[in-house]
Length: 321
Length: 234
Image 1: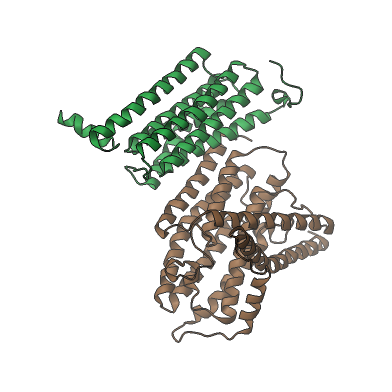
Image 2: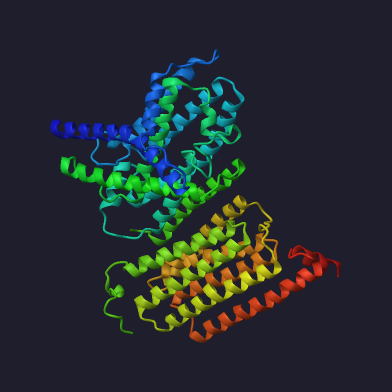
């Protein structure tokens, strides 16, 4: 690899990371706006998440007396996991510096690492709600993870690689073929991402009722910049999942080079697709009611089933292609 | 049969033509709907899913007819549309309304277990169908496995439901799967047989309708288990 290629790949990689960090709160704000509009409420300003983050960063951190060092370290670990995750998803270009390391299984591992730390931090202070939220989060996590892996395996079987860049490159640039298996995997992926991001059928991100909380219950004890980092990480996670969905199922428009023109086109495509994806998410959240916690295994079981069916359908209908 | 000029020549495309891909898509949706019916708790939604499955079946039959030029398949697509998308769901809705059974469907196993058994059935069906589909010379041959899986899933639904109406929906859905298998393996059965089967299903539906009322009058419930107890006593 020449120095020039290395430099452009590094720049593209940095650009992607910066875009993820900058756009993630906007995506959360956009979903909130769409949701409010669909429910005929007065929408909050779309830039509200930035103000919240700024406000939280300015505030002091209040720690519980019995908080251990893990409690203080966890926000940084969670944030860096999510930032790395959104950096290795090929959103703008497949020619990234991290592309050789951007393995689908490693990505699932990153999400799992963040989940373990947020659950540990939730239990660390020893409040009832913290451990309740942590246990629910682990319940959802262990059901969602196999389904997510199966979705990745479907895409991997089609493209013959578990590297995200290769998967996206293959899917984006082959001639038009209908893959029923990808449709199945897409539905499964949507269900998994709803559960993983604490969205409505599973969890309500804007709830104030402690008994139904999952994600919010774990972070009740956080304040100041710690809370800001966790909130930012949550919107980064939503951003990473949206980009993953776009990269796997609607990959057209992703650049294969690192030229500024191609990147600009890819950026426009990305913003358009993210806006549409956010609207669809708000639509799903409006049309569904939150289900009981003990219905969640059934919901995620269905996602797993769909993902397994995707592989089976691929082997039967699309075998050898 | 000549195609209208504005339609793309589906059977001229090389490789696996677009028509084949569309049929594969229809097959995948059929399978998805079979699972959705298996998981469904509400009876009205169950009937709607059944109607939707009929619609997909009709669509795929029409695509096969269009791409192969088998004109009698148009007839069977029309038959599917009239019977399974419009008439049978309408009768079922009316029956459910008259019997005022809007309760949640009662299952004998819990739903996740049923779904897991369903996956097992799909794997079996795919394996069984593999050698069969190698003999078939149709463009739709790879969907035989899915058709078989639909039949078996509908059968599973009949086994795991304790109430009469979902069992009947399962029976109808099984017929959908058979129809799909026939279309994908041999481009459809002769018209006489298709008409006969369709009429049989219709007559069966009418008889079931009468049965529902008889069962409920006798036992004050549509639970099939009461019938078993009755036969044991006698």
